[in-house]
View: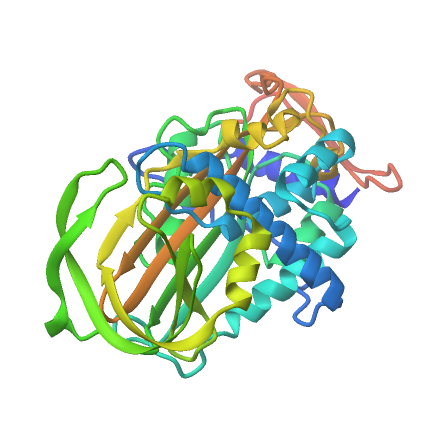
Length: 429
């Protein structure tokens, strides 16, 4: 009943133009944040076994995504964690076959009651990283993971669904009117993402992505900025040859240092781990043997990677590493996720009834964008994911009520039905 009463209230506000994104020239920040009455749990109850299962599944999903994104010769960069979190929030409203499909594709190998708290635990752990450490820009270390949901004003989202997102993801529902100006609503969401990623992820949602059938957009944004534990000296950075996957040779600025790093090697690959300041996070670089890149990449598995990580030992490493900066375009992941086993989530008969109690919503698109810059000082990286939920039926046309002639009215008490005032207007002048 609370959701129905709220839906009636916001529908009335929308009718009077009090809630809208505005026009594309003058978008109005929605400014209305409907939060669950429940607060985020900051000490979630989860077991070590559940955490291990969660991380194992997320890692397997990361490798599945990598394999499909890396089918060409181009650079690849993405945040599997961002995608997993955005789709976990979406999964909170999935039911029946749709719930099972998403779980299979994302390797969500825990029931919902266990997976959401486990993700909340990881998220809160990440937010505690880097205390006292430095960033790559001489500012403090940053690792920020934030979530938001943007819902159609008047749509009856269920309290239980909003509670799951509030308790486990710290996300409140921000009201928007996608039917009024969907591109302006997209600009508001893009501005939020830009702010949360320190301007590194811009225009996540391209114009034309949202429509008057959009009912909900679930967004995750992640920003990382950390200094190396052992920085490179800029004076030792020199142009050096780099042979591309296509076999061309290019000259690129290449950093150099001799330092102790965790390291291992076998006949197929060399692996070095570069810790960041504080030694709570690191970059692991896997360099396949000459001519073995494709063979190693195609055989890469979580078991293989875990074995290499277990074999890391301190060693004096003469390290040469190119500087690089890379920004992906906004990647549409619907087809890739369908190929991974969840095509039903994108179909008109998807079951996301856990969101609104209806067989009405489906995923229209999943959009992802990422940025990374690696230099002598450290690493800056950012990513964002948006899951766009659409309705599978056109919104009802409004009826017209124009009081331009005499009318009768009354003021009544709804619970008792008592008529407190009654009258008519025959001449309002």
